[in-house]
View (cartoon, rainbow, N blue to C red):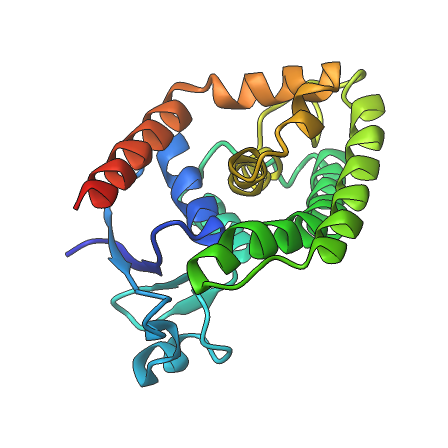
Length: 223
């Protein structure tokens, strides 16, 4: 029996946040159950019992413990299985800087980047046109965020300091979505941000998972 079950969806940035965390440390002792969001399976009675808002991802353990929200899941798994993706609790300042970096990602990046992804990516699958005014406003917020990140990354290699942590993994799915939507220049036009992105993307486990996902998506598209 696998250690736990991860309920998610193919192409979900929130699911990929958890999968990237597991891939980075080579953890494979889990079952991935994919829900079809277009069919509304996330709103099924079973999933509503796992996640009261009817969303994904969710992890469940054989003994009954259930947890939702991607960042909470990533942090819990890192602590439970001692993944080297968090600063040690004994280093109070490093732990505080991690929390600071995590808050900045959620509030200043993920919120506007998520709006772009919804308007330019998700709506396409829903047969709806994007709201260009929403995209423009969100893009301005993302540009402002990376202007600040550009200054900060001139003095550190990663978002929370000198080491690669969950705080960096949290960015990867939505930045990938920005590239897919044609907005990769917000990363590539900034030298320090682009160098940070290269350091993240050049990690072998992350490269392997993203390449496998690309192949799987191509196979599904051919069908």
